[in-house]
Length: 289
Ligand code: PAF
Image (cartoon, rainbow, N blue to C red; front, side, top):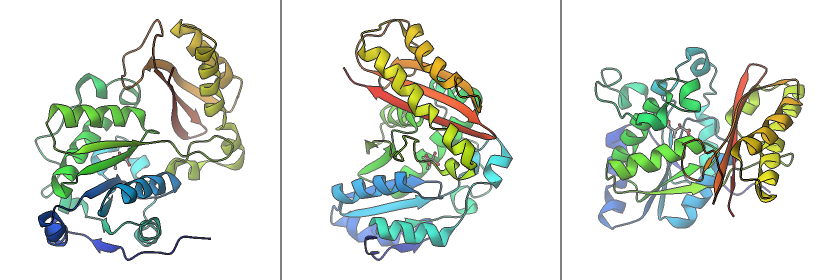
């Protein structure tokens, strides 16, 4: 049975959000914040539920941030359905849905000052999508300044984004806790993602190889393989056996970091990216030893 919808206030301006949160802020209430691009799905639901458990007030932002889309076609086809997102946030238990316009967040256009994630933003996804993480780091910094939450919730599914957000909060001394939430998967292992909606039935089946490749890498780590190349080869061999999938990278890094490893010691994260037809998918798996 679907959980009952709570009241979820829709706020579209920064001033309106300030007025709504003034009382809770004065009373010292804990404010949990879940930033999203919209197109909400079960992955976002789990972030909202975790924020609900930890906080007095839960704010979800639905803002399709143009500055993190380097490909205009990707931005154009991103789902936009505010009514569906609002009933989703209400059912998931949020109190406020903050859905500002582009002009509200970037009055006068994208700013002159941006947040540069440095080398963290130019590897893996950053190499495939130049400028993407500058857009993410800038909008996350702006949203954290606007909402001023006690804690903000991010999915482990976007591993590199999480590493960058943790680093930016540390380096810019932002007074917010960053909470990482586990990846939500369909029963066949495919990580839940807004992009899955663009997969045809055969592509949807083929896409499950990403999770199988990560598991092959995990099995190699668990079997005691310490050569990072051998672990990556185990992932590659599994992914490349699926002809409908064009592998972009399969890599092993130290958990919480992004530098390539040659020898594995300690906890690691396995990262994978591939194209399935026209859809680019990413996934990852942490192996804690
Ligand atoms: O992960 C996302 O949905 C976006 O990158 C975020 C964090 C909401 C910033 O626009």
